[in-house]
Image 1 (tube, helix red, strand yellow):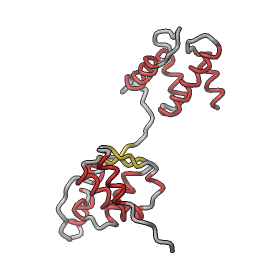
Image 2 (cartoon, helix red, strand yellow):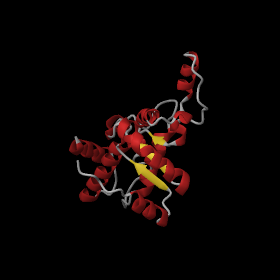
Image 3 (tube, rainbow, N blue to C red):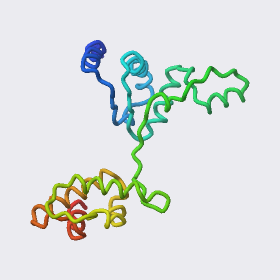
Image 4 (cartoon, rainbow, N blue to C red):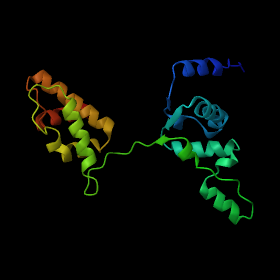
Length: 193
């Protein structure tokens, strides 16, 4: 097998001189826990020595990182559930610090809610879009009054919502209406499928 060059020192130099404070690692679900177990000490070094916050994103990121921690033999960070299970089996538990999910921030991308419990989050997102749209004749609450329809058509997912609103805005510009109505939303969702 070909041996790959160690790039940790150049990476450290760039991160330190650029004063990096946030490192986003996306698609963590593509890495196996075995691969992650090998690089977690390096991420810990970046966090502890350089003060860089690391965010792991991807489906099942928390579970995958927890498995990698166990494989790496990092028994200091055994989760509360594992500590209790070890005590039940009669083996003394290792000292427990915060779980890996508390030490390594993880993001989950859930749909934005629109229900009786949380009616404001989705509407605030729509209001933010309305504030940022540069349409000359955009009516007040142009998107907010169609909140239920937009939520149904996008499933509440931010990415889908962004596509629908940006496509509707382009349609409004091309047609000369410079406003987003149900007509533009219908056309946008039809175009996007």
